[in-house]
Length: 492
Ligand code: AMP
Ligand code: MG
Image (cartoon, rainbow, N blue to C red; front, side):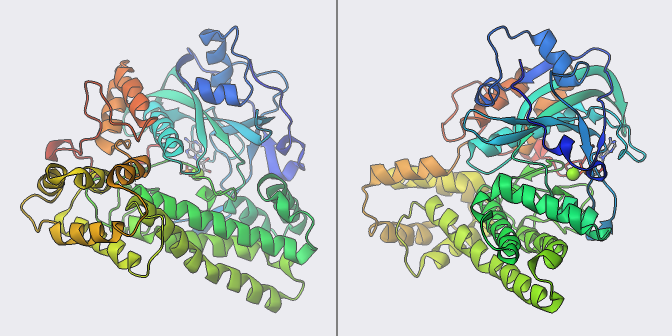
């Protein structure tokens, strides 16, 4: 069933990883399987057998050629350095080469204790597994770089958190699991050989165009490329109202993919100060803080590369600092590209930034829904009815957005497109469906009672986010007061 493994990390020196066999589970049952992703990875699905798949994707049986390892990493958690974290409840089965020729990691998450488990049980409850499945697949459908979900298997076992919960294992697919924290682990031990090995691996897998540069330029280039990808990533998060929730350095991928979906959520009403995570008491990872935090994480990455960038530490710091500083401009450029597109603008004008900020300010003042405020712009273009709907539904009896809308229309008149074309553009970038927190919570609650119907229906809707859904449940609708989820638990 599995494509052949190439085994890169398993061949790294011992101190970079620890062998870790998944611990068998009682009654594995396949509850979700991502067929299109499996096909793109080169899985052989001709004789697909869900029972055999459940054995393999729970870790009860090992696919041929897999050599499971737990990866060593450190990380700053909420700003405090923890020199040893590592995969405490996940194992990398190995790497495969997908149909497009790209190397991809296959990881089981929730597969039992490893040498990095510390006090943890190595297991994952069903809720967080389904949340990661839904949100990562939604992000992919929205065009945001992300790890993917290949499968979810229930274990037939109970895990104990605040309350007993059903256990599950997620199969995650990633461009790699190299994190800022992976580099920090070895830099903190002054293990330059390992840092260099990791940097070379990152370049080979994510930034191969750097490979033939001179040494110092190559590693400065790695920092620069990572800065660029992270700036782009966070700009895209902010274009869909996504809040990661735990932007610790161990959750920052060098590939620029979104990784480690914990207490993450999409905003409903627009408020840049929004925080969902139950463990983020001071709002360190609030929506609006995501760009400076990404830059802070990149500074921690830069520190690990200094010796590779230049033998002269002062010069290395100077060069790395200049690259880090460029994050701000890169982020702003990416964000403006994202936001212009959300307003249907292809051309660039001086006043566009003010147009964007004023729309956001109007949304914030009215606590208008982030997703629908953009989605309904297409309706507003199509006639007064659409405009009235936007004003009434989203802005209520608060200050109506008429003045802004007429400014926007005036700006659109200088785009080389008619109203129908503009509406199509807008509907192609502004989603109708996001995995709203109350829907995710509802799907999880039903699944915990063995009803996977809501999970499947929600998954179907969020994987076609730009289409208005037609099913029974209105997945476009924001939560009513009694449906609102105020805190999202990490639940690891
Ligand atoms: P996370 O909050 O998922 O980014 O995880 C932070 C660290 O805690 C990582 O080193 C995880 O492997 C570890 N961890 C989280 N949950 C568990 C668990 N149930 N058992 C063992 N380690 C865990
Ligand atoms: Mg993590």
